[in-house]
Image (cartoon, rainbow, N blue to C red; front, side, top):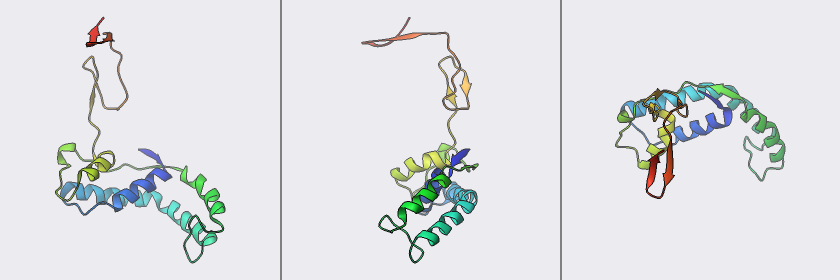
Length: 148
């Protein structure tokens, strides 16, 4: 998948903050941290260089005098695209005692293979959002959908 550096860094932060997990879930988290670390390595170096240049004692925050310049130089870097082939598992392999429902919600996008969609005409699409045309039509009335 192709994602912007900003999204890759957000994914990385989310995965690093997950509670310890074991089995396939734990492996998927570990593997995706490794893949995202690799994809963002150059960005992280450029970000660190900007922090050293504009920050104080290796840190920068919104109160820092050069924060505006830092953000101005960092923002275009966040739009750089990178390709990451995240390690995905089947939804039925997702269960892990260490995870909460909130963890599952977050991980759904990051490690669970998308389900194959079935269109109204029974055709299958492996691309979410890709629908084949259907010749049947339905209209909406007060009692639900009615064939036309």
